[in-house]
Image 1 (spheres, rainbow, N blue to C red):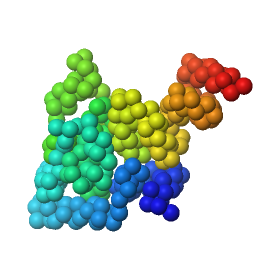
Image 2 (cartoon, rainbow, N blue to C red):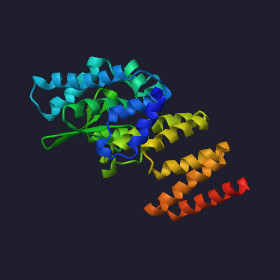
Image 3 (tube, rainbow, N blue to C red):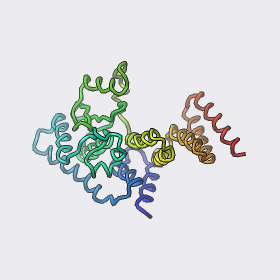
Image 4 (cartoon, one colour):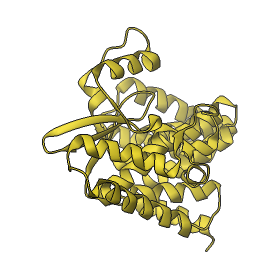
Length: 279
């Protein structure tokens, strides 16, 4: 079995795991070598080293929330990690192997590195459902701090968050509790891969976008939106049988979960159209 096949098999097994059992770093590395074959041993070693170095950075200072935030920033500096502002759209920024090689990446890929290091120390750290820019929340001793992995783990207060939201969601946008809601490990991985999917769609490469969606469905097989996207892209590409199968899964899961009647009806119409083209 090739490394790529091993990675796909690993991702498929993740689809049956409860979220808490997902190793975020290992899963992100598996996704990386689907597109960029590599020996993962040095990358696994690097992730372990990040955790060790974080422990060393915090060892001789008071263990409080502010020092933990400082240590996360120091960890990024120590290893030369930075947000890629110059070539933000580069696909390599969403591939954890290439992020480690280049020491630059997107907010979500850098966030995964910090989450992995912090959790190795037993810290409580989460990704947040913030639109347009992945953020982290570090909790300790009754306090919490939101940090930006793209900007050296800089701490963010309400004013910075409000300004960031308006930049990504429009001048009328205001902070709501939803923006502070934590996301699961699986949702973090989906957010990482969504960057690749959107880049491919924006450059009119639907086949590559579909391949990303298929990888996402391996570890998130109950994500109804992905099944509908798979149906739409397969239909667009003329893969009628695959499109029909994807729409059927969407309808089955959507009906179970109470998807909107309008969306279900529209999908049924698309499904009938695809079936008629097979006759």
